Amino acid sequence: MEAMTDGCDELGEEVVRLMLAEQFPQWANLEIKEVEHQGWDNRTFRLGDDLSVRLPSAEGYEPQVDREHRWLPFLAEGLAVPIPSPVAKGAPSPRFSRVWSVYRWLPGEPLVVSQSVDLDQLAADCASFLRSLESLPTPLDAPQPQPSNGFRGDPFRRYLPEGEAAVAALDAARQPRALEWMRAAANTTWDRAPVWVHGDMASGNLLTRDGRLDAVIDFGCMAVGDPACDLTIAWTIFDEPSRERFRHEVGHHIDTWTRARGWAVWKAAITMQAARATSAKLKDAQRTVEELWRDDAW
Image 1 (cartoon, helix red, strand yellow):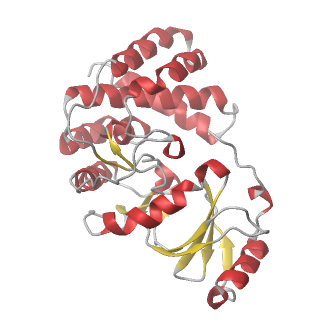
Image 2: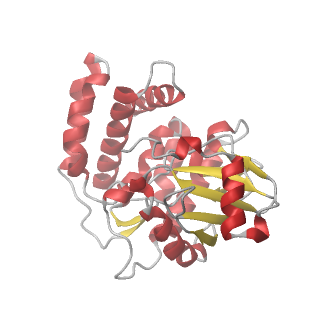
């Protein structure tokens, strides 16, 4: 995964304003404010009351812009909650060397900072969203697993070598079971027609309002393939009771859940390997590990 480099760290509100003035002058006088909770793949700025500006944080994420502009309108009508709506595509320039986007602003608070969500209800809402996503048609030109979406939707065995290398970040007593789970995940495959996957069902990409899931954002990793990667929220977000509701309502065969568990172990291990000891990401990964072991009897 690429770091946030390539000049993106120098981007600020004034630079974004100058880019808008050059390419979309109708919006250049709107208030611009960098959002507080940034993702990894993009830098995001709120533009006025109704729009946002998103800029890929590294060259490897640039293909996500075209992917979202092509496929988000196709997905939107069939989903259970709102998703981002592209409004305009910015061109590369001397100020910023990659394509970038203007979207409709979606209200709501990222789950990562929300304090008022009923996890049981959220489990039902997320299951409804994923069922609606997986039910959508998959045209022949739908995005395939590839480097720019982290090979989401591919068989888990692609990730096994990285997971085996990162497992040393876990407590020694947990390493054998973690390896067992990842190797079990690598020994099963999705044997049905490919379905749409979001690819990054992280808490920062789930917007909530009035205690409910209100929108899902950041579809840059979308693909068609194996849905197991989207099920990791069973352990990364939910607790034991809400996990059971999510598992029941979203469905799927036991083999798909075996791969989902492998994904969750992989994600926790590589995060703990890379994260600083005091980082929020490390704490989230440690919580995921605790939930995985709490769910060990499953």
